[in-house]
Length: 269
Length: 326
Image (cartoon, rainbow over all chains, first blue to last red; front, top):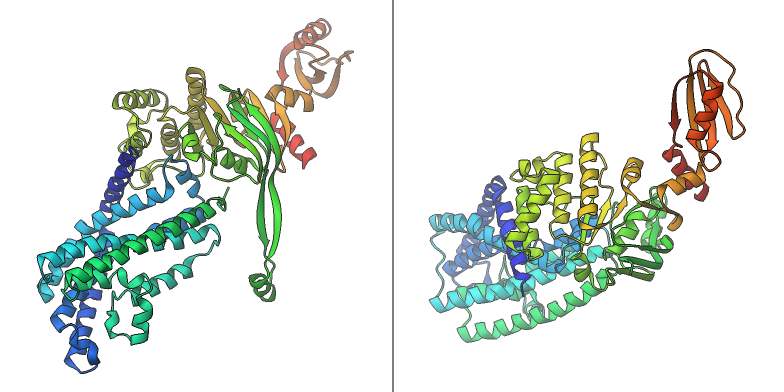
């Protein structure tokens, strides 16, 4: 498909835009490092005491620190700006201009998020890895196989996160005030994805329910692959489930999109 | 075949009425007071290739809504639209490939990047070959002089430069139809002049069809061969500017400055509407008598030092249309 060059250039433009905001990048990094250090110290304190119960026997402190560092890295790199982009474009009426491009609107927003990811990898991830290595040691993967499976699983994780964000964003076509819905979704992801606290520390019942939700397949799965807690075979099984979620959410998004298309309003004349 | 065909077009909006007071605010959360409003109410018109059509009307008349349906952004509630033979909302991508669009109050340029970067993106979106891309840019540069600021980040451009950039961006793929939604809004006289010149050039050299919405009647007067006047979502006038103005304000004025103070005589086909010192204003209907005839008649009777013919005021005529259809 020859539209690919256009989408490719959108990625490049987003990278160029990110370079124009280098100050923003540095400020963001300071925030990431604080978050990272706080998380690591909390885990050190928790493992030092006796507060973790049976969960602590699953992964040791070193594994947990690696888990946390990589989790913060994933959060930094995964860019799902699509939600806010749709919301802002609808609210300000600039969605009209996006519709003037003979391209797929969601394709445009996806390319822009890919561009943000590329620049985040260079701008944010590399400095953060260096900082984390100096403070807590380099977060080594369990094995080269684990690292490779982690990367593959991350691709699917990002797809799940992006599709959920796009869906929430599209709600802006029905309701002009979207703010809180996005926050609710983000809270669900933060808690149920295992990005902050792995789900094995949660009550049994919640763990059972969460297996049927997409959230733990965004962070916990690739992270537990990385630290070697999940065997390669289980990792492949998990990626199968990720694929099913990508397909399900993709179909749902396409359906919402066709409904939203007829609802378009352009604010501000 | 007309390049744009619109038939019985209707667009309804649901408007939620908000009332004052906390009680009413809470009530409207549960039971919103919804009302259906017709933004566009049964429009039909055709536009032929190569025309420059002014689409005018007061604020809220449904101009922008119509443009947004013609460009496939909004779905019509009823009626049909064909642009270049296609339905814009069903085949949006195919239709917008043939359109250039400028919204005067918005920009399609990438704010943080140099202007040229947007052109590079458009080159890839429309799959323009290097040679043609360069030729088009050169041509656009001749008319719009964008070379001076093509490497400047868009956020640093003046409004006039930005508008020139936006026009160039809308033209880079050589569209069949150009939609301009208030292209001269907020611009100074010089920039307006440049933009009008550009529109005329593109129309003349490329037979490009132009649909223009504006509140600036100078735009209309200088550019448009035809005028569509809308009010309350309906077309209230359709025709060349002259004929609309002529119909509503058929009179012209002949202003004569006398060289000495004499009593100005009445004329059978012109009426004295004002006399002030040495100046006399004759009002006449151009259908009844030509200006030259009237001047010839009067110059035999009056000591004329200077004279001028005043056209009826377009602004007054248009205001009259809005008022009588409002």
